Image (cartoon, rainbow, N blue to C red; front, side, top):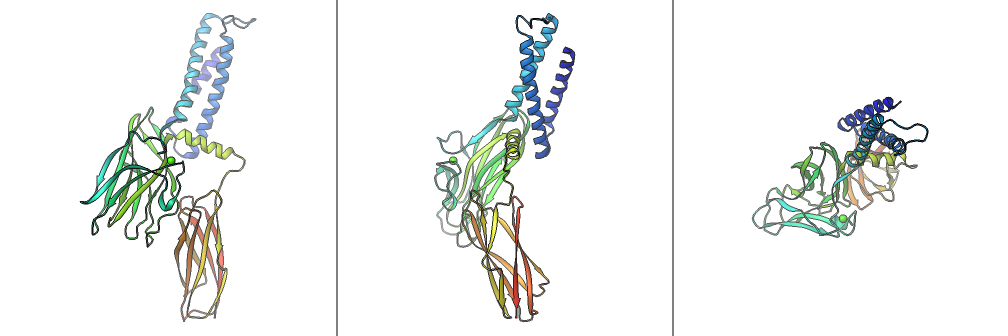
Length: 381
Ligand SMILES: [Ca+2]
């Protein structure tokens, strides 16, 4: 009976070792984390049983011989080691920065600018892009460049860096909320790097005049890190700089073992009301229009995100059913924290056939790929 317990434990150890190293997809990883949790629970139970068997007096009716007692002690020690590994290596945060306390450990790592420009040190700001409040109060972290010289220059980039350490080679989840200032003739990006490689980025809008992106975006990615020291860099890049402040905002940067993310995913799956998408609805200013050729018909479309959800970049598709000759275009006209408005413009040429035209409007959230659709009709005379 004792030998059977030992053999089972050897099997458990080999399973737990291979599962941490071979995680491929998020779904596979979640399954493996669930297996590991079950193994940890089984080991905890085994540990309790062994504790009982190894009491100094031993169970009253079946005292354990010394030789077996020694083996049981080894098994108990191994079980405890695996339990602590499951906790420490799979559910651990290795780097965290919310910019809300005293900043330390950050230093300027790149300042690629032109004469007359200034790289700004890492700052704490209470208000982000377009006045967006930080995900964690009171501050965003801000990185940027001031340009108060006449004329335009080429690409500029500034970064600040901080080091962190992981104990094991594995996949790690990197996440942050980030956003960049707007610019009508350039593209400003907020960027996060690990060990010099771009991992996450968000671009400010290029809408004119200087309409900043309304909501910052939470982004995450998986990176593979070897055991030891690594670098996080956050920075601002612009492909052109003419005048003003070019900035990137970050908050709640986290590097955690992929198991932490899987654990959060498990909690999400297990919760009674999983927050599956889409998290927005469509509101059309009108669902049909009468027009006399030639004409240009404008139909406003508003995308509203549900309470608790912020506006994310979306693509708007317009598909005409038997709508030969009628062309369309889509323009973003307004955006706020939880909504965005578009003008769908239908161009009806003089030669268009009269009759009723049906159009399908698809709105797809780019990151989640969630889609919502609606229909509009156009009656042409
Ligand atoms: Ca914060």
